[in-house]
Length: 194
Image (spheres, rainbow, N blue to C red):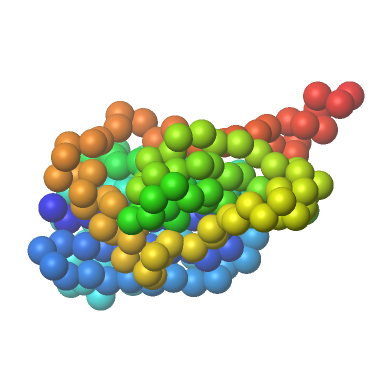
């Protein structure tokens, strides 16, 4: 299966194309708000490097979160557009699945800004419980000796592609890319305080 994998949930934009043992990868630090400006050109470069184009994509895998609210929205909109234009199937992957893949009983974590954390107790890619920690709660947990894992075993792009291909083999497709938000956006929280 030809699979295009997109991750826009952090400052590091990752685009991977995998097909028949071939892989083309680009990871680029785009900052907090650079995804929109470069996502399509990076995707095009990855497809060209793989010697193909978007019409050959059978499935699009997207990291649906948690992470940057804007990044998640940009990724979901772009991946959905690719799927609608090409008829490609959708594969949803979470950042927690990537971080905990191949590990038993760990706490996967994603920075949520201002010292806050999105976290989940996981077993080999399966989330058992997710939760949000404020900076104060995080500091208390770290004082108690709780360990948070922020990176996968191996390069993120490779682990992401492996998870996506396994989900494709098992037929784990979704009809809609549902953003994995663990709390309201800053704008929503500000509105609620009024």
